[in-house]
Amino acid sequence: FNGYAWSGMLGWIDFNAPGGNILITRGIGELSGIAQVVEGGYRISLNCLNTDSCPPAPGGIDYKVISDANGNLSGWAWCERFGWISFSCTTGGTTGENICATSNYGVTIDQVTGIFNGYAWSGNTGWISFNCETGGDTGGNICTTFNYRVRDLRLQYSAIKVDITLTYNHSNPAFQLTQTSSFVFNLLTAG
Image (cartoon, rainbow, N blue to C red; front, side, top):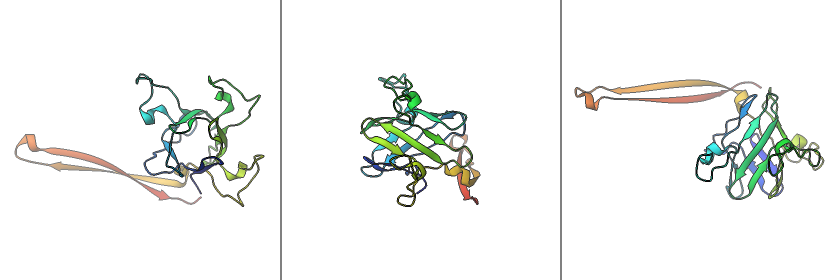
């Protein structure tokens, strides 16, 4: 499945869930949007912007999953039901410190194919695997048994954007209206 991660405790996590609006940055930047635990429908927020909980909101907490120039992810996601999910041992400590000496894990995005690899960690849910190629207990390939991966599908599509403007002309200027809507159509490309 393109778009699914796996957790032994949570089951499938859908990164293409309707209304999730996940934005995956290429290179340096923040990820945003909502993934969804299929069993139970619990939502995993990749950025405090998704939940309007960034400071200065009352009790706001500044969290996000961040990509470096090579597609190495770090930072934290949040799930109301299951708590914090760390995307890298480099920021995995309780106060965001590097814990790679004791627990080496992380999630990466291939900057050419858009395919995710590796593991995220949550103290409440355990490991979350992003690709069957590294999904086995020892990080081995289990794709013959479970074929899944999270992938930035934008790399497979060309997009066409259409802007439509409707104008209602009325003799009374107070009743003249103009409304513009934009539509984006993705066209699957080879690859």
